[in-house]
Length: 82
Image (cartoon, rainbow, N blue to C red; front, side, top):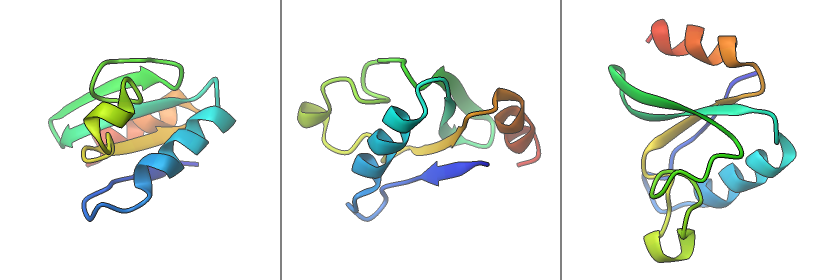
């Protein structure tokens, strides 16, 4: 099942995204910058500025949409259909 997090209005999306990551340590997510610009990560990735790396200094890191799933192929299919 695909789950999305996007903190456009300064909501709790960042915290919810981090909870999802902890519950799904073998999962995957896309940093979604645009339909043609995205990057696949494992939930354990600590990619600076895009996941949870130094979150307290960067503020909400879900200002860019995160699309998550425990099934990699499901994510790839979703992105290709956008």
